[in-house]
Image 1 (cartoon, rainbow, N blue to C red):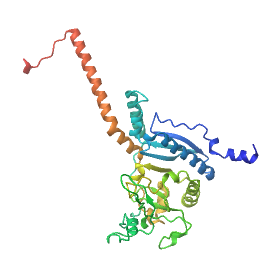
Image 2 (tube, one colour; image 1 turned 180 degrees about the vertical axis):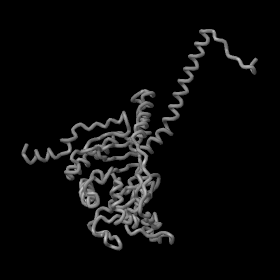
Image 3 (cartoon, rainbow, N blue to C red; image 1 turned 30 degrees about the vertical axis):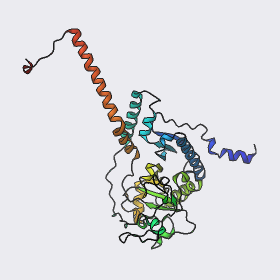
Amino acid sequence: MSSKNLIAELNSPRMFYKDITFDWKESPYIFVGALEDFEDDQSTAAINMVYLGEKCLDFIEKNRSFGRKYRIELRPNKSQWNLYLHIDSVAWFDALINKCTDDERLNKARSYVDNVRNSYNPPRAETSDYEPVLAKQYCPYHTECVKHKKKCAHFHSTPEIYCDAMSAQKHRPNRPCNWYVENERIVPFDSRLLYDKYRVDDNDDWILTSRQSNVREILVFPLKHKTNKELVKSKSFWLWVFEDVVNKFFGKFQPNEYPVNCFALNFGEWESEESVDRYAINCHGHLHLQLKLELVKKMEEKFLAMRGKVDDPTHYGLKDCQELETSRLLSMENSRISHKLDLIFNTLELIKAHLKIPELTTPESR
């Protein structure tokens, strides 16, 4: 092998992840792989993210029962960052039916729920020195209005940045994507911070926005229609996020500590429930950047869109546990308890009969 080919092979993610096993039978929160030296080599980190992301999509493709909703997360763990695939816990629980006994299923599910809850630290009530900036009420179907040459309702503002690509739909014909940007939510990441009005340049590929809710998240959207399945497989996307957004942009505010707690991409119902169009099959993709409180506090002064965004982001693990408990666990656990009580009662009856213990009587029964 030539030295050039050897270097290429050493830089290949396959050298680091020879044996990726998706051990889903113990937990719906599956460890996929780790990115070592994450902060030092952004290019390699981007390559490895693409490789691991593709492996996650391949796993879902081979296990269609997990495809209804899932989430890919990159989380910090000391000197390395761990990548996880979070699958729907109800689908996971149902998939265990032929893999283990009912008691084993219940024990695994209860262990997962308890571990998630025990590791969760309730947030402090954070306060901000700034009032959140309210957005106007924008037309949620502006693209369709444009397509059919109609005016938006008089009480709606017209979004200036929107997507007019056609999007596949559930249970109905294809429709325009209808994704749009609220001007008040835009977070300018370059010299456009000085502009009175944000303008999209011809060479722009992405845009940053805050959330409508007051949580510590920034969303990264592609300006042209791309799905999350496309984003997770794009090296240029990850390199831009790691290098330009996190290192250069966030690094100005927080140079001594890594400013992001989690990178996350939602798929399926977890993605569409955040979309303007919940019937869309392949929504306009977006990456969640969960930020540290210190970073948000420093950004509030400069960016109107970040003011008041100090609350904890959505904890999908807790939501998942609640759904697993209410739809599966509680009824089965109650049934198991009832069955054990019946066994205890029957055993006591046998003991009484063996010892010839008379029935207890009350004054009313005499």
